[in-house]
Image (cartoon, rainbow, N blue to C red):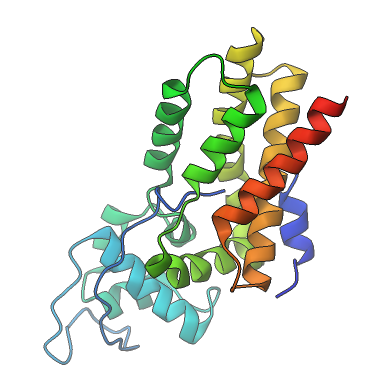
Length: 229
């Protein structure tokens, strides 16, 4: 898959496997949206992670834009209003528990030694934030194809990327004694997001490669450019 124009547009605007839901049992789906009855003896969904898996299967079969909240609720065996107890909207499903991931990233930054070179610190947290166990890589790849490839998600993704960049900018600003809104913290945050998106797109195009290795290598290249100035 090649990077779409929408994907490239988000680079100036990752996502964390640790922030995303854990693997769950997948259930057979149905597409009757007239009610919430369960079929085939399948128990109804009771967690956000389970609901996410049901939604991803529907997205694969019907397409993201053609799948409605009503479809997802029916396939999950829950009432439509119950869906919103788990996710604010359909667009939030691919992001999982992203806010919790941002808090873990902040904690990771705070735990780093103060004498660690700045770009090494940013690289470490980027790689850890996006570390994916091998057994979860297929599901994470499916998630990222949605985030980077579905035009309807781009505006929503911009808000998520902005929140992610702010975590990086806060840390960089703290290290440099500058506000997070200053030019250098914002530049490094934007550049780091660009590196992450580039590494992710390469990983989607080359699934045999290791995501953590790609992120690490790309950040080292960015650090070299930073220190060469």
